[in-house]
Image (cartoon, rainbow over all chains, first blue to last red):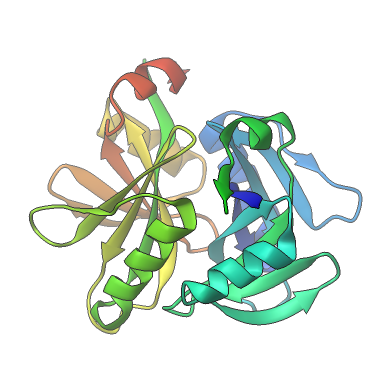
Length: 125
Length: 125
C-alpha cells in the first residue's frame, strides 16, 4: 500500500528567459519569489494546495509546464504508473522522470508538501 | 478593482493520443473522467482546489500543459498581465490566449470554479 497525489506544478524556462518568467508568474499570483540555494528552483508559494514553482532548465530546452506526482514510495508509484501506460524517461537520484502516453514529461518524486500530502494523497492498494 | 487566480490546469494532447492520455491521467488521480458535450474537454475533478482537465487539441499540435487564469474581469486581467510582460496571442469569444515572457501559452478566462474563486482569488486594485 502506498500513497500519491499531483503535488507540484512547475513552469520550466531556459536560462535566457528564466528570470523574467519567474518574476512574471510571481506577479501573476502576487507572491515574493523564493529562489533556492542552487539557483534552479524558485518557490512561488501554492496554488490552492499544490506547490507552485519555476525551474531554470538547460539551454535549448523548450519552455514548458510539468507536474510532479509526489509519493511516499517512489518505486511503487512508478510501477503503478507504468501499468497505466507511462514510460520511464530517466532515473535520477531519488526521483524518476516519466512520459505520459502522449509523450509529455512528468516526475515522480518523494513527498514535497508535508501535511498537505497526509491530508490529500490517495491510497493505492 | 478585479480579482483573479490560477484556476484550471489543462493537459492538452492531439487527437491520436488524447483518449489514452485522458484515461491515463484519470487513473493517476483516481477519478472517473467526465467528457463534455462537445468532446473537447474532459473534467478530471480537482487537484486540491484547482480544476483538472484534459483537452483534445488540433492535429499536429504538440502535447503540452497549460494554465487558465480565471477572473471576474477578463479585460482588466489581460491589461494587468500585459503590464507584467505577457502578450496577447489570440482573442477568442469570451477569453484570451496569452504568452508569458518565455513564450508559454496560457489563457485568461471567466470564473470557472464558483465558490472556490470567491474564497481564493486575489484582489487587484
